Image 1: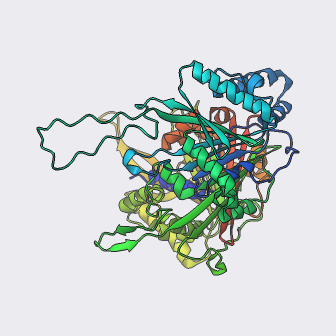
Image 2: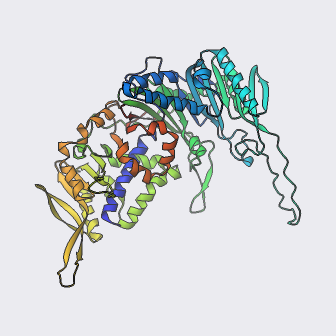
Image 3: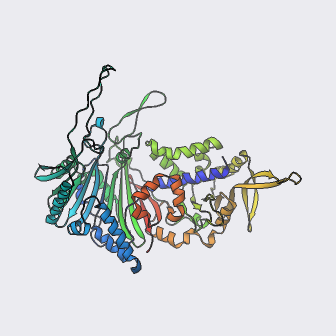
Length: 617
C-alpha cells in the first residue's frame, strides 16, 4: 500500500466519522425563499393522531405546497420564473400521472395546510410466513371538506372506469373505499399462500395446486371528519388509523418519545420528519445486532450466549427555509430500554467545543470540494465507535478501511493517529485541474493542532518511521521559501543503454510544521496550495460563510460539500447516492452545497443542524 493511499484512506475515514456524527443524510424537495414563512410554525402535525406509536417513520409538510411555490418565484429572477413554473407544473402532474386527474382543477381548491406520509408498520398482517409488506399511510389536510369528498368520488370513478373492482365498507362511522388487485399481484399483502409441503410426502406424489386467493385491496381511502382525507395501501391500515383517533393513547401524538423529540427542536419549521432509527433500518433491509422490538440472544465466537443491547433511537428533523437555503435542525434521542428513561444519571452530556470556526481552516483553499473541521478527533472517534457498536452494518463502514490500514501498516490507528489529534483540525479534498491534470485523483490536505505532550509528538514522528518501513525516503524539500518534509520513492530509469541512470522521485506524501499546526498533503502541489491558502482561504469564502452562518454556535465544527466539485468523487465511493439523486432529482438538480454540524449532546439528546444551499436563479 502506497503512503499516498494511506493518507487518502485516512481522509475518507475522517469524513465518515463526521458525516455519522452530524446525524445522517438530509433531503427533500424545496427552493430558496427570501425569508421565513409567516404562518404558524413549530406545531405538531395534526395527522400524528392517525399514526401508531410503533411507526418506523413519519414525514409532514406543515403548510400548503402553493406557499412554497410562491416563495420560490419570489426568489427567482424574472427571466427564469417561466422555467420554474414549468418545472413545478411537471412535478405536480407527474404525481397524478396515472390517475387522470389535474392538480389545479381537482386538488388545489381543497388542499389544506398539511400533508403527512408515514410507514405505520413493518408488516401489515404481522405474518412472516407470507413475506413482509409495510403499511403506508398518507393524510392530506382539507380546507374544503365537501370538495375533498367530491375529489375522492371522482378519483374512484376513474379507477372503476379503468377496470378496478371497488369494495365499500363502513367502519366505526367512516366510509372506506378500496380497489381490488389481482391475486398474483406481487405487491399485495395477501398474495396467495402456498401450503407448506410435508416432509413426509413421497417424492413421486404429484403436489396439489395451491388454492387461488380472492383479489384483495392494495389501495384504500377514507374521509375522516372535516379535517383529513386518508390514503393507504390496505384497508387494515385505515382501520388502525381510525382506531388511533378513537383511542388516542395508541397514537404517535400521545407518545412520550414523540413529545420529547418535538420539544428538542427549538427553531421554526415548515416540515418535519420523525424516524424510529432501528425500525427504519429494518425496513431498509439492514441487519442490526441490536433489535428494536425485543431483546434477543446472539452466539459469540466462543459458543456461549450473550444478550444484545436493546436500543431505542429516535431521530427528528425539522426543516425551514431561510435567506441562504433550506435549514434543517436535528435531534437524536438514544436510550437503552433496559434502563429507566427518567433516570437522570443515565443521560449523558457532551457540550460543543467551538464558539467559532477553527483556525486550521486557514490552510484549506477556497477551491476545496469537501472540507471538515472540528476539535478533538480522538473524542469523536471514541463516541462513534461506542455508539455504532450495536449496529453491525454501520460499524463495518468504519472497520473495513481501518482493518486494511492496520494490517498493511502494522499500526493502531486509534493510538497512532487519532490519539494525538486532540486540538483543532481541518481536512479538505482539493479537486485536480480538469484542464492541466485531466483524470488525476483528488488530493487531500490535513491540518491538526500540534500536540504539546511528548507522547503526541512521538506519535507524529512515528509516521515518518512508518514511511521508512514502506521503503520511502524521508527528506527535506523546498517549496517557495519554506522547507517541508517529503516522503518519496526513488526509482532509476534510463531510455538508452549508453546513458547513465536517472533518479526519479515519486512523492507519496508531504509533511510540514506551520505555526501551531502540523500539515499533511498527498502531493507537492497540494502542499503548495495549503501554503498559499492564506491568499484565498475557505474560511473567508463567501459561499462557505453563507453555508455556516445559519448554523448554531457553539458547535463541534462543520462538514461542507461543494456539490458540483465533489459529486463525481462521492458517487464513486457511495453508488447508492445515484439512486437518491434519481429519487430527489428536483433537489439534486439545483443543489449547490450541503453543510452539516453537530451541537453536542445534553440530557441524552444529540442535536445538530444542516444547511442545503440551492443554486440562485
